[in-house]
Length: 212
Image (cartoon, rainbow, N blue to C red; front, side, top):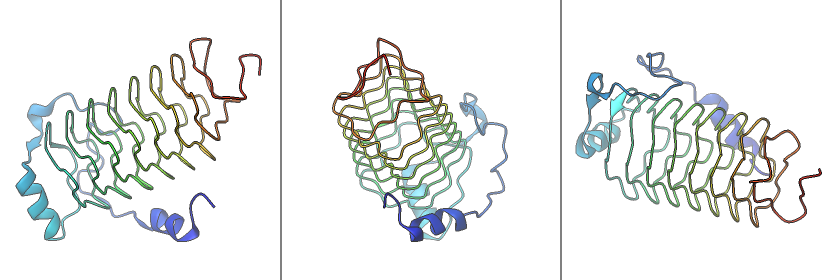
């Protein structure tokens, strides 16, 4: 009962293509931000309120979007390093290949979002709702995911080295080949480590040991 059938249908149905969705930054950190269009908070919100959802490959570094409702927005390959979006609603958002280094995403709603290949190094995702989200191949090294809800999320091949997942909910989450060295899983629930890559630097949840 992690994700109901209606959410799964919404995720499957949300396949509107953006003209820039296949740009060269997709799946890797967009480090050439000088080639991106700089978008201000006001311009983004105005365009979104007028029905636009595609904002692929835009520069939103440091943007402040406290408590915004941007559900189903497409920001694939965009740069949102140091952005401030706590308590925002980004459910079903498309953020594949986006850069969110040191982003402030505490308590954000990323329910069913696509963050595959995204760079979230040292990002704050404390208590974030990431149920059913795709984080395959994402870089979450040093990120704060304490208390986050990751039930049903896909973290296949994600880099969680040094990340804090204390108290996180991981029932049904796919951690296959996820890198968990130096990761803190204290009091995390529902953790399946069978196919993950952890070592003796990993702080395991109760009931797990290195001789599994």
